[in-house]
Length: 241
Image 1 (cartoon, one colour):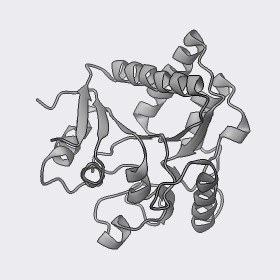
Image 2 (cartoon, one colour):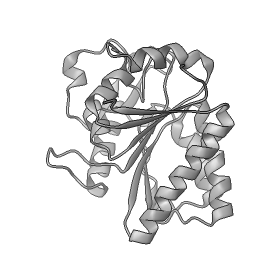
Image 3 (cartoon, one colour):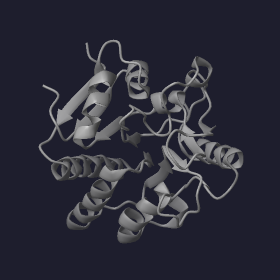
């Protein structure tokens, strides 16, 4: 049995609109149940279309984000108003249009030293998300993108098994193969612990990486993640058939 579900769309716009609608369905269910919803966001090109689609549809559907707590799958170590900041992208396209209150936004402090930022982010997520038996905070949903090299969050190819198997919540990435060099990322164990993981893959340049990741002998970071989890949803705007 496959441990992932692959859903293909004709265009990036269709992908963004459909995933936005599905996420709003999740939030509406949480609101009806009176629970909180802990989500981790990512950046990337498709995130722009996705965040815009969420803001537009949420307004049309009058969906309340009052029970949603926002975290990040990873962050670049830059100032929060830097165009490279994943927080900045979400702030401009999601939080400001939806008027999300600051107490629900738990950004990674990219302006601090990476070590301090990772420690503070790990503490904050542990105070809000429920914990599993292994002591990992359980996020309800993590959104990830995919790089041309198969990386997700800031988990890049070529890492040692020690790092891959580390149970840390957030960890530092130095000398990233993609600029900027210093980052903070969720570790594999924390992403594995999430109730749901949705991977948004957009652009023909990602096809090779996705195909390799979903093969039985895949060794990319996405491949490892899907192997660690029992179910991961992958949305792409091209066909692998």
